[in-house]
Image (cartoon, rainbow over all chains, first blue to last red; front, side, top):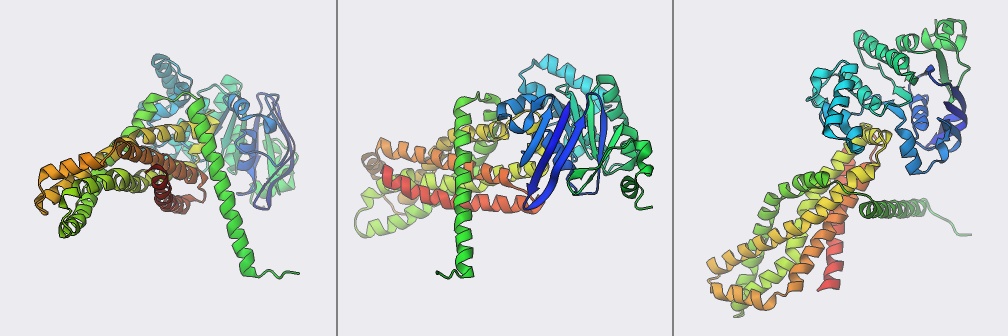
Length: 238
Length: 259
């Protein structure tokens, strides 16, 4: 489903991703952890085709995303959902309009759009907020709406960029539950980038630690304490 | 061997950066024009922007043009009366307004109001990941955000310039008749005699060109923004400054070519 080999990305002479290898199968739940600024979010954007790699190969759903034309990339992106760290809701649009945006761009009928938006709002438990603007929502509510919008086009892969960062434990748990629910109900492959330990344990089958632009061999969440590098990061050096 | 001073190196880098920025701007402009003429335009989006960017600029455009027309007429009336050329005031004010002051003042107003608004909005969208969200949803940000604004401003500018021209001339008329005691007949008659259709049409075309340039500059800089709130402020300021300078330069070039 996602195959990455020898991926390199450099920003202003700083190599953020350095000959990285990664393979993720269909329906898997993968977490990528690592300290802030280690390149996790960049990796997510490279997988989504939002950034172009300097070298290396990224195959997503069998397509070489690193060499696709803009038109082909646009078509492929409809199968990849991404929840941004800030939720990235369009602040001039209401919650309803944000979720309706992908349908509107696809020129669906207003009746069909209404039904699909309301279904998605119900899925993320935000039905009563359809008329609100993003600035009227809390961080957790924004993430739920961002998630609903990302799911609008029924993606096969969901990429989550720090989905629970900055949220209180209750909200974090609800977002984590949603991630697991989506994976189970719709068989969506999920890649969660985070540095929240609770999120790793609740949302991942396999965990990768990113260090110096590369991923260490993966472990299962319950094996974290058996591997020194993972233990140092997760347990804070204990 | 030629010894290169640090100052020369700095200047070289500055020049290279300038050319690189110009190159990026030209590529961006080509992309915008290509998309404008090759992809379907959503009328609803264009109308929304025409209202937000155009209609809401009418008030400030009229006030600016009114006072510029009055100030210009005030100076001209005094001098022309001294030399016994009071009968020509209407034509002179008309030509000045339609060819130069109307389009130029509207360009200045639009660069300050509309250009700043576009740059700030797009820059904010860039630093809050909204541009990336658009791309992730399969939309080309240039097509979705820039093209409708370009079309809206290109359509609204001639209307704004036309209003500014009329307001400026009317203000000049009031000063000429009220303060200069010029016969209203001569004000209108001299404008009739001296103003040609091309003076009016040329001014409207200039306005459209200014509008397109302002949208291109402010959109380009807005979409280049990074580094948070400071970046938004910097790019908004740069967008207004560069747009204003380019409007004045382009005004001279177009005037020398058209009239």
